[in-house]
Length: 119
Image 1 (tube, rainbow, N blue to C red):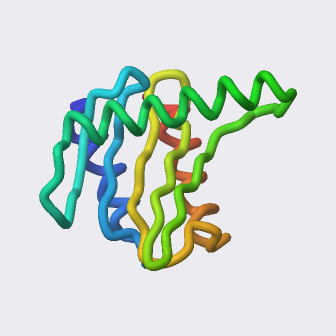
Image 2: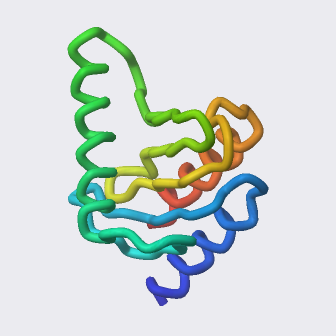
């Protein structure tokens, strides 16, 4: 049942135009579900995505930011979006082009909110 729910969320993320790869990761860095379009060290990817979000949340708290939930890592031709999805999970998505694309970010944030509510 849990595996099927996670798979359904992965499919929702994959359906977003511009997403090339994605994972649902526990807050402690374990990949619960994934779709990757390339070879990569999956345990490290999960651990680092969780670390990046936790670090961003910590620095946000230090400077007084409220409800920090998204981190963008930008490069010239692609980007990574790490989004908190409730107390237990996060979504890490690799995107074509710019992670500042509001429609992509909005859709992933909506899926993250749904994941956080249901899991």
